[in-house]
Image (tube, rainbow, N blue to C red; front, side):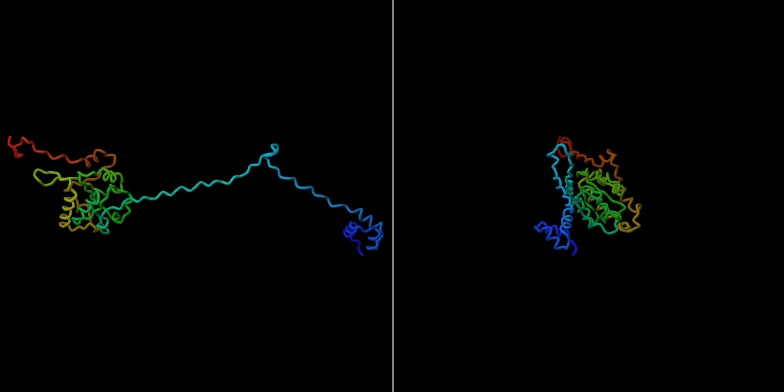
Length: 261
């Protein structure tokens, strides 16, 4: 039988004598004793050193501990505020080359009452340029009653080159009365009424591609239409916004007033 050193060591630890082990492995007891005594014990691994807290031992270097990165909160979304829709967009036919632009819904209704295409706004917003009514436009007749507060209306159009280049403005022309007088409260109605009569005498349609400036020049000249001044032409803009003069009151000493002097 082959000598099993590990088994012999185990049996020796249980109390077997060298003689008994020699009989088991059919060898001499001296051989068994020598083999067991020459066996080297396995090296004992030292225990792992405990991890020390650097804060408890000032000799050890401090270890930088990474902190979680704080993600800033996303900014709140600002709602997009759309400008108010213009009045009277449904009065503008497809392909329209020219229409009236007036201040407010009331003047727009006046213009529509004379069968005229008209859009009413309080102030101009550049977003209006993308509306279908403005896509084919060549001329915009801007009409104002000087008795109204037209400051924001006029200045917003003067400040946008896209609309300014397409506009002519008319404010309070002179009536045919003798002597001529201004009627500031009805100028929008008078111009739109005149445009209806003018359109009946001319064959060019406002939706026809051949609608030329020459076809409407007499209408524009007769109602004192003029280009809108640039924003830095403050004197010209102020003249368009000037209020009409107060009508003269007859003197109580004037015999034409019906009073006896």
